Every structure is written in C-alpha cells, then in structure tokens.
Image (cartoon, rainbow, N blue to C red; front, side):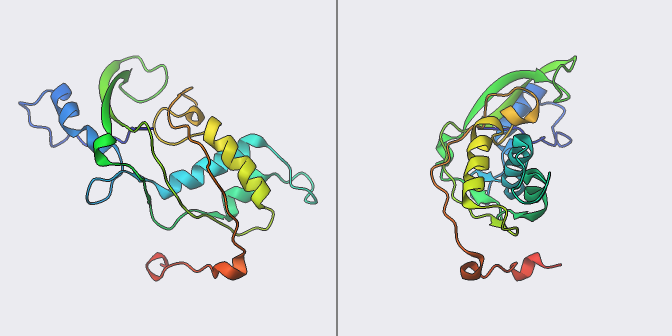
Length: 191
C-alpha cells in the first residue's frame, strides 16, 4: 500500500532542496497515530466498499432496478475512528517515484516524490449496515471485489490511474445481528 497525502511544504527552509525535503518528510504522507503507527482512514474503508458496490451494478432482489451501490452509499457506516494497522513502524519504507507534479494522470510536468510504502499489513474493523439488503453474502462479494479492483491508498486500481498498489485479501467476514450489536454512536460523534 502506498500513502500519498499532500505534504505542506510552506515551512520548508529556503536552504533545503525540494528533494531533500521529500526525503526528510516522507512519513507525513501516511496517516498515523501519535506513536507513528500507520492508520487506515475510516472513510477510506467506506469509500472502498461503496465504490466496489457501485462498480458491480448488482440489483437488489425485490426492489426493482435498485442497485446495491446506492444502498452502500447511504446505509453503510464505517468504523467511528481510523483503524490502526497491525504493522511494525520499521516495516514502512520510502519509495521514490517519478510522478505528475499535479497528481493527475498524464500531467505535463513530472517530479520525484517519496511515498510511504507498506508491503504487508493487517487490519480488523467493523462496519454497520443500516439496511437489511446488505447481507453477509453481499458484503463478502463486495469486499472481495473491492480487495482486487478498488484497493486502499495512493495509486490503487480504483482511482482511475490504473494503479497496482493497495490490493488486499479479505480473510474473514462475520455477521452480527443488529439487535445483538446495540448500535449507537459514541457521545463524541454526536454533534
């Protein structure tokens, strides 16, 4: 998985070259907790699954032409907080790539950028489906499609850049009934 968040270079000293600045600050491209451990953004999980459901264009039985993509977009609740990856901070390595300076495919000017790269990672998280059309079977189909065709992070297959990074393997999906879950938003999440 590659991390490609924008680095704020307004505080770059005039005496430091852009290349040196990239080498010094590449870890800032990834989302991390206070001790530097990489985190998977909670909204990236939601977007990954929703994008996969939309791409599959599968209709919901008994609901006419309604597709799962719309249901995932409105009824899937991602984890409340970003998800900590089960990765040793020493396993995050820098990788330099020659990419468009504006971040857009086919951009005219290209520059070297240093990305945070993780070869192997593991994450466990919970999503809540607020519509019973999202069954365990559908969630498994969508998650497996997302794992190969959408992915996480920068230069992933699903971002229209034909990327090859960010693919993952779904190890298991477990269903918990909503009455057993007792779903409520944490107090700090209620505005």
